[in-house]
Amino acid sequence: MFFDQDDGSGKCVHRATRDSVTATWNTPTPVASMCGTTKMACPWVSADGLTLYVDDAATIGFASRATRSGDFPAPRTYVGLFTGISCPSVIGDALELYVDEADLEVDTRASTTVDFTAGPSAIATVNSASTETDVSVTFDGLDLYFSSDRPGGAGGFDVYHSTRACN
Image 1 (tube, rainbow, N blue to C red):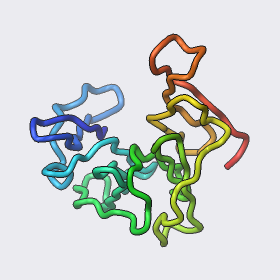
Image 2 (cartoon, rainbow, N blue to C red):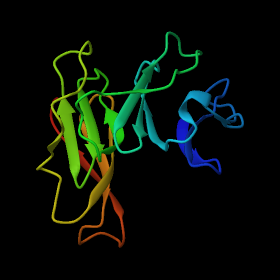
Image 3 (cartoon, helix red, strand yellow):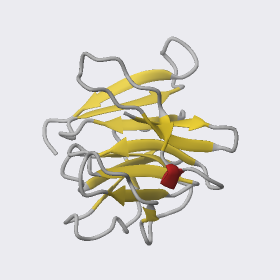
């Protein structure tokens, strides 16, 4: 499990492991390559566990490792991606990158051998005049979760769910 936590010097990515799905989580430890002077937040790990996407101080960074037990190197930033975006979420084939900026947005690419560079576009079907943030998409790309302060919720920011038939 990867998550961000303020370690006293700013947000840092931490990792917790366990021996099986029924076992207790071990004590979280900082991921050294994702701590330091730059805020690292909202880590998202690919379905195969080999790529970690992270909010790297207002843009999106990513790092890949050879095996699930290996360490992630320092993330590199997608060249050409807009700044001011945060909290990445990627579908299983890694061809769609979901982020939040002022609203929820998605960027696409034709192949995993190229970077996301087009710049994200708004997801008109879920965005409203209110604030939408904290986007998360399932690995199959069919379910989208986010928080919003739109009217009609329980109050403050509520969790919303949107679906699509195929990706």
